[in-house]
Amino acid sequence: MARPDRDEFGNVLNRQGDVVTSIPVSPEVKLAQYNRVVMGAGGTPTATIQTFGGKTEQQKIQDAKNNKDTQDAFALLQDIFNSYGLSELASEIEGYMKEGLGTGQATLKLKQSKAYKDRFKGNELRLASGFNIINEAEYLDLENSYSQTLKAYGIQDYFGVGVTPAQRLTRQQAMAEVIGKDISAVEFKDRVSTSVDRVKNADPGTKKAFQDFYGVGETELVKYFLDPVKSLVSLKEKATAAEIGGAAIGQNLPATMTSAEDLARFGINREQAQVGYGRIAEELPTASKLGNIYSETGTTYGQADAESATFKGLASAKRKKEKLVATEQASFQGSSGVGAAGLSTTYLRRGSSAGQF
Image 1 (cartoon, helix red, strand yellow):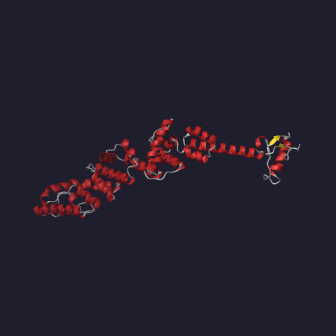
Image 2 (tube, rainbow, N blue to C red):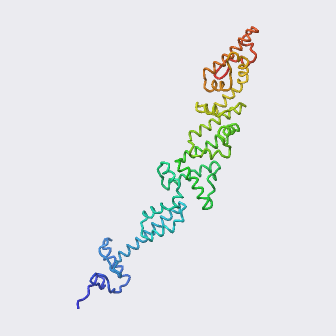
Image 3 (spheres, rainbow, N blue to C red):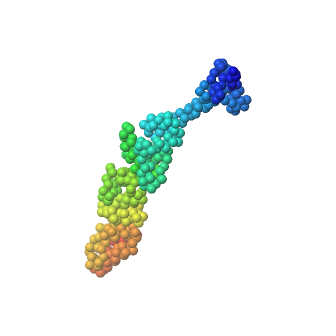
């Protein structure tokens, strides 16, 4: 009977090379044999160690390492999804690991789940609106920036409190509507600051003008300005129009949306409006009175004329003023022989300048 084949460690091998009988060796010997045969003198694997089951020691070690690496990778994947607020996907992540999927495949499957799509609904809305999706880090940064801006203006609960899971989802869904319209963190802050600083915290006249013009009260201002359907340019123009209207109201003059928006588009700002309407309030009573007195001349002078002359320097409006002054002067000179110094009001004795008689 032929002597059975043995490996370097004395283990009996069958014809397929599998170990059928193992010779007991001490741990020290096994370690020495492993270092000599498997790792070689330079630490590079040179041979294999046979064990029961047909797997080498090196393969077992590699399997264990691979298994640990897989577990570590999936633990990291689970940690990532937990940071998204998606801890409910833990069982799915574990299932994918047991199925033998790689983390890349598992991630793709997880991103198709309803929980993930609900969490990052803004990306679905972006795609529907023709915008590119953004990665999770950018998405979370946007949410954080929105929250920081709202907190800075004392309206941190605008999107909801977000304490319970249901409240957090409601808050996330509300933010998704803004993200879906491609509102950047800078634009979001600009919208909030415009609504709060320029309207909500403005003088009573400006707030009244905004409500009169656009039907929006103080409690609804932030919501109105954060409506992504409305462009920031349009919203800022409306804020300016309200400031112009507020300047008129502050002088007890009527304010109309048409006139205020026209002046806003012309480039008039809040400070210019306040100065200009102060001047108009001073001149308009007498100017209107003269227009009524000399109506037979076909020359009248109202607030619209005063606005055109004061803010736009419109020549036709200025000529109306000059004509009324000349008519008044001629009337007094003809009846009493006095010059300009004898006019009925000190107002009319002032020389004309930009926007004044």
